[in-house]
Amino acid sequence: MKLLIVNNSNTICNYSKLEWYGTIQYINYKELPNTNLELLLSNINSILITGGSQHIPNIENYPELQFELKLIDIAIKKSIKIIGICLGFQLINYYFGNKVIKLSKFCIGHHLLDINTINTNNIPNLDIELLESAFSFHYDGIIDNTNPDIQILARSKPLEEYQNGLIYFIKHCKYPIFAIQNHPDADLNNIKKCIQQCLIEYNTFWTEEHYNKIFNNFFKLLLD
Image 1 (cartoon, helix red, strand yellow):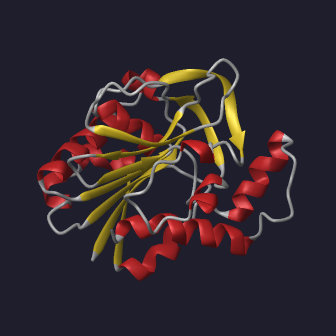
Image 2 (image 1 turned 135 degrees about the vertical axis):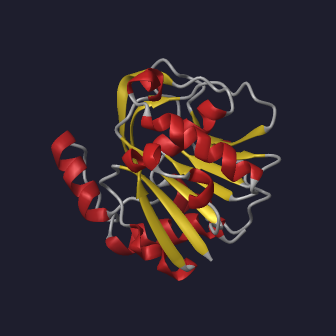
């Protein structure tokens, strides 16, 4: 099995822990404009689109993201599984017509996903409590789903004026596509740096073992 990781200059994750899946191929998003995308995907089984600091509401400022949209298009035609995290989540939603907005407040911390909105009965291998405790770190978000082929699997807790929460976890009803807003892929040491910089209260249960459980739980999706 071969996994392509499209790295959007994400700095809080360590994907070497996915070596159990098989061969991992990395490509930086800035390399995509000079890459033959059809050839790139010729022997790929799954794609992971990572988080990053780019802003979809200002997507015209990031021309490289247009090539990620083309990559999604080709992957769908080839029936390649796609998983998007944070920016990857937003980019997939944008591809399918959902509006990504700049939030009134930066979202950072744990337990932002509302466990009461979880709808993952058709994904029995996921541990919901682990998914809920994953780290969140984003400036933009999605309020509404306008595509009937997108199934909302979970929303966030009410945030400021977004009393119905933000869309946080989705799957596509026709294609093997999953995407999540928070970071089940986050690396503990880098999260600690974010927490310290943003003066977020630290909790002792946020251990390396706990984050490894979150990571391994979420990436079972690669096998479904």
